[in-house]
Length: 166
Image 1 (cartoon, rainbow, N blue to C red):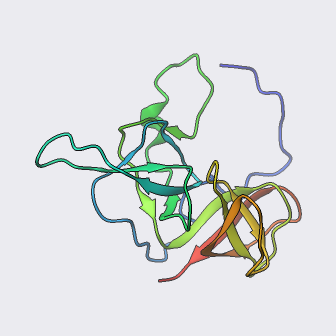
Image 2 (cartoon, one colour):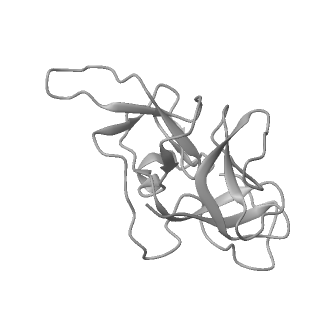
């Protein structure tokens, strides 16, 4: 494990991919697993074609790349289960084949790379599932508008809260 190279003056607002409130959450139904390359918690995910392992178990596989609107946000619930090498740095990657919760509504912490203001629409990057924010209806190359909105923003790059009510 590497030595810390940065310290922050204040605590982070929250951990990307975790719930930001006790409001109800709707999850994508079914047996959901991370696809071939895994999925990163706190990013958007698209369903891919599942692999049929048997007549009983036919999971839906998710990826951080896709076209059209994503199904939802990858929730960070049990990441400690996936950091099993004491010498490695922490990761938000849920490995291929492991179960995932895909949040289709609720209030969640995510990371953005620019200023985000209350009420802006949340856009999903089609190549890595990261979140971006802009005014509703914007045409943004490489991004697709989601049904999520900023409910608590930031003045610069950092953690924000996004919300979607079903």
